[in-house]
Amino acid sequence: MRSETPSVCRILPDTFTLAFGTLFLRSTIAATVIIAQAIRQATPEDRVQWITLLVMMIVPWMTNLAYIVLGVRLFGAAPTPLSSAIAVVGFGWPIRSNSLFKVVQLSQRLRSAPCPTRCWCSTRWAA
Image (cartoon, rainbow, N blue to C red; front, side, top):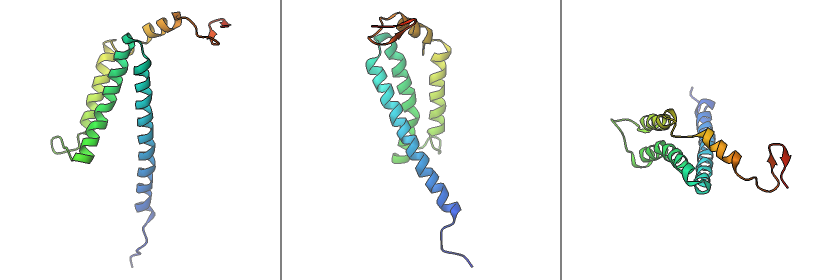
């Protein structure tokens, strides 16, 4: 005899999907806000790498949104895996060619910048 009550196997995946989906959405929105602030506050020579980061982050999100909302398919399947691969290549290419995330130059420039009030500067507190 079959019971009409929902089993744990049917309830649990929906709960996990909702919980982790909400967590993922919040973290992606937070990451977008942080990068938008970094673009606004960055110097002109550093702004390009932040814009590149934002664009490569948005590629999979937009294709996934197009798939879910508009039903857009690529070769008969969801476009999200291909767009994620494109984003990985989009990140990897400039990183490999040393044109994205020039950490050494950025840190040297920030280290030589004047110290703001009340911060720790190498060996002493700034007054």
